[in-house]
Length: 115
Image 1 (cartoon, rainbow, N blue to C red):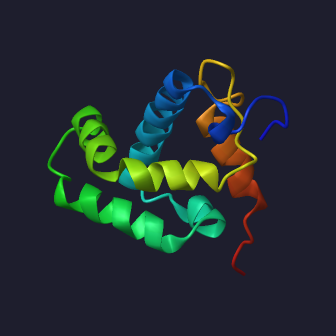
Image 2: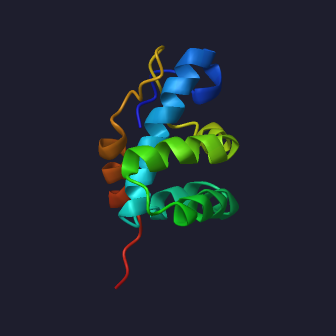
């Protein structure tokens, strides 16, 4: 990700809320695609497991409703993940400097491949 911008901890409270909602929406999409390998290589798998357990329990919900429920029940886990990803930078209003999907794809390219 870009080196310009602010880390999650350096954002205002309103900007953190925007960043958090944006990240959760992206995370839920990746969860639905079973594509969380990159995140698993960056942060504690216990955090991911805790979030995914809640997502599993509510998998009958649509994506937007699931993201809102996950925010309500897993907010501290998401905040901890964002705090542990210093390479992710945000604008002053909490939007990611680099689009989540673009950043994710570039990280996927760096993963080792199996022979």
